Image 1: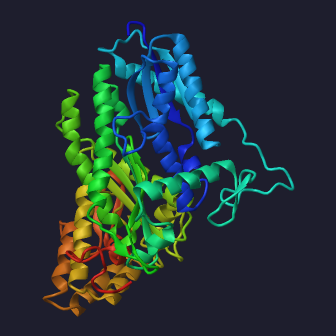
Image 2: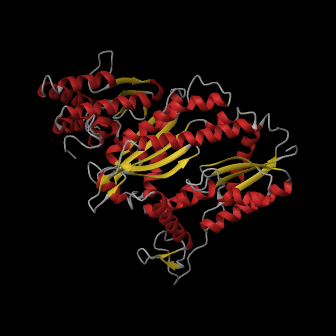
Image 3: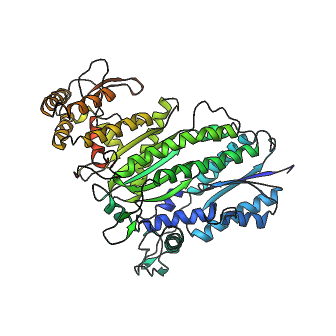
Length: 517
């Protein structure tokens, strides 16, 4: 293609589209529709997706670059073809999703060529996409007129049909999502859960699920280093495969579990997996392990991708992950919002570590806890919660976010506490002391250390502080100094206690060995 044109696409408001309702069937159905549009059916490897089929009708000699994660890019021969490809793909999304949409832009490949400067042209296309998306975002959605039945699922658009599943009035978009969910379940996931409550039924403690959102760090910076079209293709294909393989491998450790309504179902469901990010819901007792396994596998597999495209692979690509643990009745959109906020904080930790490894941040939402991350981190888990303060000190009752190495240690220590049957009442006693004052927390630590079994429980407590405390001889449970975040004192004790109910003992196959909840 001597005078080629680059056409780039990105799905609009993908989170708003996928999480328009709080029902798993519509959320997974929306995800499946996007998969069919972008990547095609998983049982038809090598065949074109619906988007590629439309592009080929307009431009038979088009050259695909990548299609994954709601985005895509192709090369076409003429300006007219570029215009018609954008129009055809945007029209396809409106027809298939009804209220979902995609934005396309085009630009000449020159001054780049297929062998040089391609990454920079893709970066320019990204800027153009953001500008056009901002223009489209200013358009208002049509409202619902009085006396029109609203959709029972999204409550945003007028109902036009009745669902055969529950006789609920649905709009075109939600009905399409349900139809897609039925196709997905019948053909590819017969043992997937029907709803979040079914996932919660499988968990220990019962009723709790984990929502994982993870995103790769600095992918835009890496892609700008790619000179040729072939490098970009290899990188995008390898990255998409690595994300999917990492998720598949982590979830493959958790087989189907018996459900109280009969039969067996899988303790997880993929919401969106592809490109450089992922979303998974899973039974609460497996959530942290899966988040760490995905992150570990991604890092381990990334050097091969970098090596293949000729980029220096002294350090791996890394993931930042956010994990929300909450009751299955917690709204899906709220799960997604919190997990993304946690992921952003994990990314900040990755930056502090110069992206040498990934990071994980997590939050446990209970009936008594706030679902506002800023309030929890800046007010509840700081010196502002002390009954008795100690002057102008910056104190954090948490050490989150954790690097991948630190998170592994935290999980291992929680398993050791549970494996030793460490008294839950003593852990709660220590936890409550954190919110009283620094001195009270130190006093309670010493009291518990002298009260618990000297051979069975005390070594577990001591080793935990050796990993997360002040190695210069500070006072448990506090660690002094956290220079990147300019904090005077932190403690990992509260983090341990919060995840304790969701952590299985080592070798117990995903269940709480103590039976405590």
